[in-house]
Length: 121
Image 1 (tube, one colour):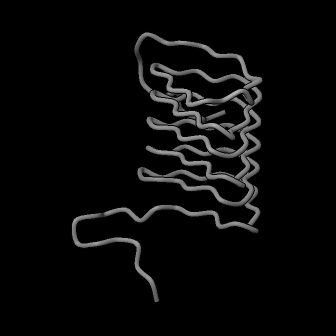
Image 2: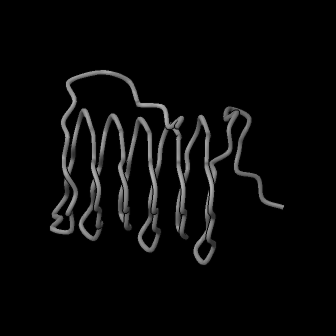
C-alpha cells in the first residue's frame, strides 16, 4: 500500500485520477489534484488541474495551477495558467501568472486583497 504522507505532513493530497469522474464537492486544507473529471465544487488550499484534467463547477483556493480545462468560476489568490490550459467562466484573482496561453475565454477579475471566498451556497 502506498502512503502519500510523511512524518512532517499531516494532510494527504486529494487526487482524482485519470479516467475517474467525481460528482460532488471536494473540501480539503491541503492539495486537490485533478487528473480526471470533477463536476461540482472544489475548496482547497491548492488546486491543480493537470493536463487531461477537467473541472466543471466552482473552485476556491489560495493557489491555483491550471494545465487542463476549467468551466466555471474560480476565486483564487494566485492563479498560474499554463500553455495548454483552457478556461471559461470568471477567474477572480489577486496575482495572475500566464505562461504562453491563448485558450482563456474567461472574464478576468483582479482583486487587490482579501481572502478566498467560501463556496457555501
